[in-house]
Amino acid sequence: MVAKSEKDSLLENSDKTFKVLLEIIESVPSRKRSISIENGERDKNFRDVIMHLYEWHGMLERWYREGMDGDIPSMPAPGYKWSTLKQLNMEIWKNYQDVSLNQALKKLKLSHERVMDLIKCHTDEEIMTKKYYKWTKTSNLYTYFAANTFQHYKWAIKKCEAIANLI
Image (cartoon, rainbow, N blue to C red; front, side):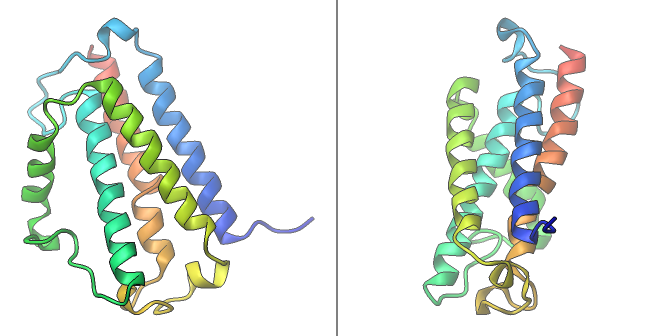
């Protein structure tokens, strides 16, 4: 039996947690899926969580594209630093208040597939070797991919479970 590669595990974990996230949302009757809860937090409904993931996929795609073109991407986003993540995430939240849950889900499914395709383009060595690409600095591609797929999906699952339990 051949051991799974890190790439295969990354793809499998990402798809598995993504499906769990979608199943949580689908477990709620469709007429209730757009209900917002007052929880004192930024994300008050499924759409808020979904669009947060979608926007972070977009940032990852931009970092990747710019980095592979030989540039050093502005991370996490132009005008923001890792220390100002709270402000960035609030800006993301504000930008998507007019998007429906159905639109959000369509966008997220497409961005998830695009990120999976990026992962599939690489070998285990390219994904796992630190400093393999200049733009990842002292890290590796795995760190970026994992943070924006299954690790972020686990956060979203907890958020969506909490929302589902309150609506």
